[in-house]
Image (tube, rainbow, N blue to C red; front, side):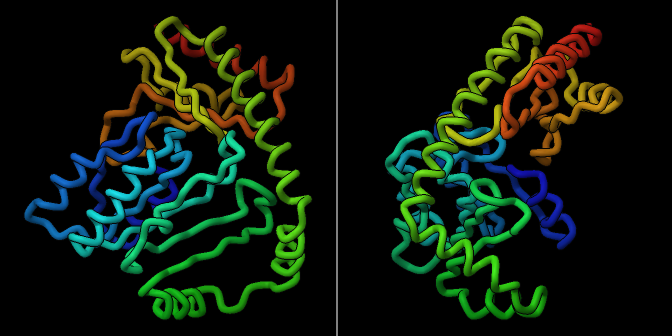
Length: 270
């Protein structure tokens, strides 16, 4: 999952258990069911069902409905991060976990951080049965929010211009993902595999198993290139040969050169 979330949970001294997930269907419901039926009470589950970070997976609707049902049956709070949902390639909006919620057990979180303006830091929560508690925590930690940017963005989102903007953005990101993926295939060692997400700004890259993503990260940093090693997205060591590469910037000769440099750094590990 997103490494920032792991850092927050660690700072709160909370124990984190990892549920396996795949790039084509998201969280493994069978593994989750076994975990929920175990001896330890699972208090909460945090999921990115749409364009998961870093895998880029989208959960099928049947899996979403089943996940909501299972968490409600086990009295496990389900926290949904839907930051990336609007970046899906299709015109049809993706369903959310909240859509299937009949018991107010889903805390739905979304943001404009990845779609409109990261610097505004605007987001919202629909907290279900925990609304009053979340509202109180929000007030104690950050007090009131600056109103002008919220009013301006709200007015923009009510107009047809916002949907037109999203359509343009999706097309641009699709092209950038394709260009980045082609360059990775061109420059990285044989045996490298790259996901093909249906939207978003991220590629999840699997290197041949003898490569270390942490060593790769440090070597890249020495030449001024930033990548995200797979280990930081997990509390296990299963992803040491994976890296996450962002596609949010327009493809350019400079990015192409950086990817060629990354490919050479990997070859130097052989």
